[in-house]
Length: 253
Image (cartoon, rainbow, N blue to C red; front, top):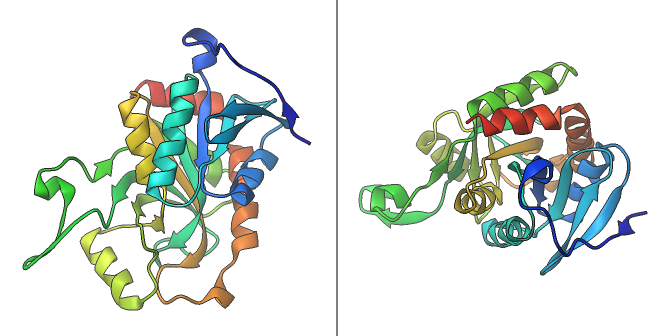
């Protein structure tokens, strides 16, 4: 059972900053992450939601809602309330076959807004091409490598590659092929990573993304989804990560 505590005056520097904020979409993902962490969790109040603070690891977990807007709003609320050394978008996702098969764990080496932009006569143009900002955030390479090594050591299939953030999940082979052609090497598709990374960037905190693959990106076939297995893989991933080292590596840039 989660205990309830208050934290009206959070520390703004020092040891309290060496924490990881994990932002997921739904409670089932939050529960999987917390099962992978030791010591139970305490509930901390947050405008519009509740943070779950792991008692045996320097990790806070927030189920912010589905989509980049909800993810950005939730992450920003948490970052405004408390200091963090690293922010992670995490959860289950679709994987681009054969690069990231069902059962794999993806660590993003780029967090990409895949459908934020405009259709033009020449094809899709993202917001960077349009001159309206960035469509890509790059997680700290040393943190990506450290996470991949830790996950690989437990026998997990680990893929490092771009994770695409979309507002509409792919449901056809044609759109999957279009996204793969536009983003060579894309490993997974999810709905929250770019929103989390945008919030983190505004607070000057590094961000990364970790996804466990429940289904292939392509035609929508719910019977083929392996959600339970992907949630179990998410739990194992957070049990394997050396969080303090990950935060330290991220802080080095």
